Amino acid sequence: MDVMECIHTRRSIRKYQDIPVEFEKIGRIVEAGMQAPTAGNIQDLRFIIIQEKSKRVQIAEAALQQYWIETAPVHLVICVDIKKGKQFYGIRGERLYSIQHSGAAAMNMLLTAHHFGLGACWVGAFDEEAIKSICGVPEYARAEAIITIGYADEIPPRPPKFIIETHAYIERYGNRIKTFPLVIAEPSPVIEKHVRETIAAIDESTNTIIAKGVKKGKEFWKKLKNKE
Image (tube, helix red, strand yellow):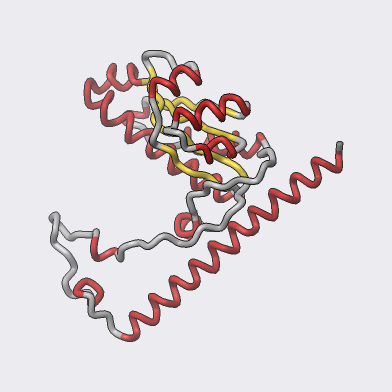
């Protein structure tokens, strides 16, 4: 799929099939995270791959008891070397750039997982000290996000999104494109028709792509069982 299709059809997956994920795909997802831009190319991102069941259970508990997390066969913990950012950019590097870097990496990883037919979810709510202890994160580093990875066992509906005119401004904050009929909530019948058709097409494409990922995961598991 092309990048725009990948962006529009990606969904946050919180239900996973109880089957393993090919390590090659995990590696490609981490590699995508490494390609995220960093200030001055300092490359302060670090990634921890968690597959062990007992650790996944601990992480789910540390993530404010979000127990669905432990069902994902792979957890990718995105960390940042905060001393490196501080060394080059001071307090701004430590407190801002590090967050920007990990956010860019997380989005790359979510899109790559979707590209490979996998489900993924970005988890940001967790006890940082607990995650540090579980994953052995040193004092000079910080866990910024957890990405759950696995073959999806659900097809979530498309979440509602605002139209571009509500969030995009020209030249200065608040300066909307007032000539666009959609901005004043008076769309023409032609525009309404195109909007409905676009939404329907995106929903159909999303369901097809995620369904293929679910099917592929089951086929992969069946092959593994046949080899045993």
